[in-house]
Length: 297
Ligand code: GDP
Image (cartoon, helix red, strand yellow):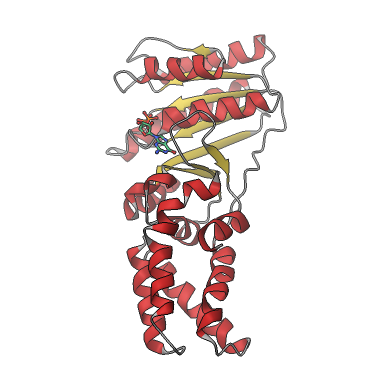
């Protein structure tokens, strides 16, 4: 599944270009490093991260006395595995625990909530969903479709209702059903940061009051195909809300999977899952070794 998610990056995009660049050189030269840095930037690794990767690569090549071009690829793989970090660990110690899911429209937030609910359910945890994105037209119906697919109950109000009231009702329902995990879909309008912050604060206060000691995760959903935009969204959301993890969707849809490196390096937030397709089981736990290996092996 992880390999499937990185197929375009590996076979058509960034990694293919890395391979071609390395193959076109007979010796390890500054020119090779410059070309590799260019390829990384084109692959959405972003300038600051590409610079770091190349400088780490140079250092390792010097320290390990590597002189053969043939070894550059393996060395780069090691560096990549060291830059990316994450893991699917979710702090869900209490019963119930609560997961807030945030992200702008179109990134795959609803689909991801469905996949996450399914995943938790298949691990034997009971889940209740709350439709607190009452702002976007159609969001509630769409979430209902995914709740049905995953076979988990959804608490919803009508469009335009107060999100904090939905959260309150979802928590009561979760308590009544003795649920393990409550997952809340929240609106992700970023064009007004203050609005978003106010809304998330209001939701937070409800959770603080109703579930004072509950484990809580705030997961930000980002679309890998949007490259630098995703990185910028992450920075904005990190400022507006304390995010505990990132879910990067549509990794299968980009040939520039280097965005994972940019997110990891520019933000101090772990990538917890990646989306690798549109089906309910297309959510993969993130793992640095698996990522580097899916790219280079
Ligand atoms: P939302 O507006 O953020 O709730 O986005 P949706 O969940 O409606 O998803 C938007 C589109 O992205 C839909 O067509 C999904 O099928 C698609 N999508 C979501 N996640 C993935 C993924 O990991 N891979 C691919 N290829 N498509 C995805």
